[in-house]
Image (cartoon, rainbow, N blue to C red):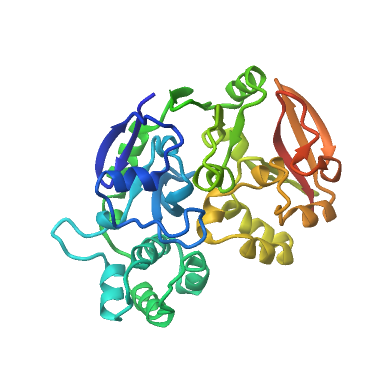
Length: 356
């Protein structure tokens, strides 16, 4: 499998020797050293990059993620932006970069590029009321937060205009042309990496490989690579299975696809359960919420599944899928021991249902 994506504005095709190589490693090996390694576990934000993808309306949308726990195959069909990509074609700084310079918002500079990328994503998303939340996943060891926040407020008070806005239709067309249309697989360094594109393909692959690691946001699995140095035999990525990303609001409940990210769920939870929404804001940074999924948090049986007590209180029920045959199970019956669940061989979590 060749991974095709946009690196900045340039189309690239990559065939990784190791499918579990992180985007951070890949960037630095190719001279993109603006992206830094701080913690290698998604906590400090020094490695923050931005992914561009088409939203539900077919327009480019940007989200900040941690490159240190993101695997290269997950870039397929997306745009990867690092700090080197933000300046205008004529060499002028991006408005957010210029604001940080004008407000003297850098000290040692190690963390600065991560702040720039988080604020660039915010530049394309919302107003200045979300600055602190957008920066919660970026640590400044020099404690220079005040000028960073001042720079963000000054920039976001101005027009939201940059070349990414001006050339959005062209970018959308290029992303559509890159979109993978069928299941892909790659193999290297002892790992086989499978990327189904629909639910039927996932059902087939899961039955064929019941012991495979299911990868959703990677906010936990990524640490198996960077901290524990594990070799994963077979990985099945869930990130392009659209059916797992759906969220349906019904009169009495929410039906949450197992691949829906915390970022997508946050506004729904804030509306239906304000306290639960506050919990999600503290569960992880914007970078983690942009990648992590509630289904993944449930299915890995981790003792740090912070949302589980609240979901059990809401009488959440799981829909489990094995080759197209489904069964329902109350969430409190799903966990049987430390990192052990009631999943049968070849079965996976498809939907979580929470009562409103």
